[in-house]
Length: 370
Image (cartoon, rainbow, N blue to C red; front, side):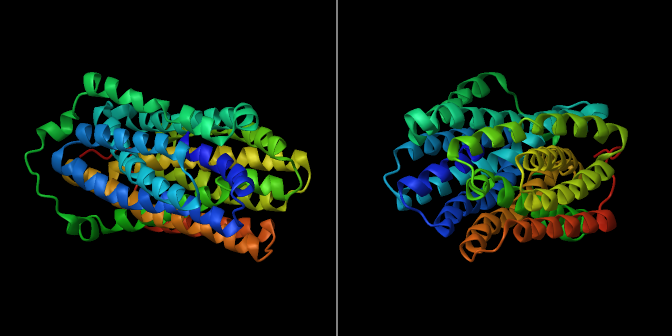
């Protein structure tokens, strides 16, 4: 929800603070710099001190600075707050997927983790609804304050969520980072490539969607409405991936959804009419978010318990480098008057390259048991 809100807030901030496209891109990127650092550090701590405490602490850390960003006085203070929010969020995401993976029964692991990730789409939908109904009459600060309310969820987590049983059974707390690049080298190459490709494309495209529509001639309210409609297709994308990861396997599902996402990226960049923008944008949401769900199911299954958190966190952290580059790159390219067809073709090319590396180096993990 918070990442989704940022994409809508950028439209409002560009007007209110007179931000250039490049500055707006930097605001998106600094949040993702924090997520890059947080993912690696959070994964390491999860293997060292446990999944539950890291999940709880990062949730609170993220929530506090999320609420604080509603009171940002200008571009500089918002940059700092978005960076700190990113640290917490980046650490939380791979730890949450690892925790759920280790609780899930073996024959349903993939499906359950994809369904967990489907709530990312629920968050985007809520962000779109908030932006459409709250930002025009009350302003972006009110939307951010409402968006920070879930920090209260931490009180329930502290009382009700236990530690992972697999972590509890692991006596070895020595984290052997070199195993990522020796014993599990093929897995690491495949995961890092896919994480980079999907994070680069997702954050470059989706953080800019409302702004793209405004630049194509639609009003701010129209763009929010159309993005809301496109966002609704994220949920069926996740549900389809949840079904196919158990039927076809993780690697096959992830590859097909990624390649389809690349095709829709080109289609969206070329679209001019409302109908084509909605169709290609909705299919882009469907396939790209379905791929995210499959990736979160696939990632922790590549590593044994003692390095699962750090393996997942480092893969996510490397991917976030792509997510840092993309929003700023789009802003710079827009400022140089490069057309959106060319920009979205860049995303498609990166997705296809990541898919190729996955096909060559990746291993199927559906029946893998650590």
